[in-house]
Image 1 (tube, rainbow, N blue to C red):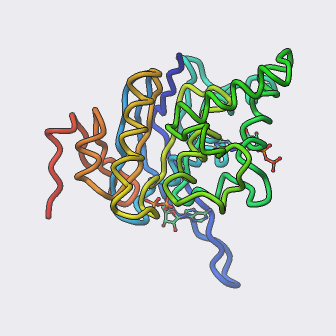
Image 2 (tube, rainbow, N blue to C red; image 1 turned 45 degrees about the vertical axis):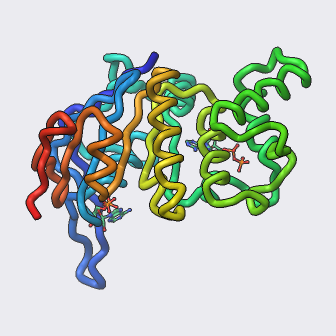
Length: 245
Ligand code: ADP
Ligand code: ADP
């Protein structure tokens, strides 16, 4: 069970401006949001509004310029062990499934490593059982031998499911899904979004669903935050938020 809160978080990037030196660009301005078990929060907004910057701060790829990130109510500490525990707790599903999969490794190899890291006590057979279980959880039928295939030997939708299994392997409490279906065929998008919804409900995950598609945000989330130029300009229950045309 994990809760992550952004409290009044802002992010400025320093942008080099030719020979004149630098300027700063405020990508995220005073954003507060809470990710908690069994809830999906959607972050919608046009390109450049700051959505990915929020994802990068949640993954600790970037540090906020001001404001706080709290894990289970406590500010993140700088201790190595705490940082590594935090990194396991928040896993990312990227727009491009290849982003989290090495094209030369089998799916099994991808899933085995985090399982072993997490559970060094397990025998090889027990690790393999967990790998098959991860595949079942993302509805990849073990009978189809997905474990021994490499990423390019899967369809786009199957590949995204494998990437989701990779994200689940370290047993995170929170999934950050950044446009998780926008590179997939329209016909299989709902299947992958339904999978994320099922994981959220049945496995009590907290999900941040980043998208510019308000229709799926409505359908698949509990709360919607609308961003515009770094600000949250509107927020509320999924059925109440309306975007100006
Ligand atoms: P979105 O995900 O909504 O498209 P981003 O968070 O990617 O928005 O970008 C918000 C703003 O921050 C944009 O103006 C973008 O150019 C800028 N930005 C993002 N990352 C960086 C970076 N590493 N350095 C400088 N500017 C950045
Ligand atoms: P490599 O095989 O290149 O060493 P790993 O699979 O070991 O890569 O991953 C390196 C780091 O990236 C690990 O800390 C891992 O937890 C993290 N990582 C990998 N995939 C994700 C993901 N989807 N979301 C967040 N962190 C990830």
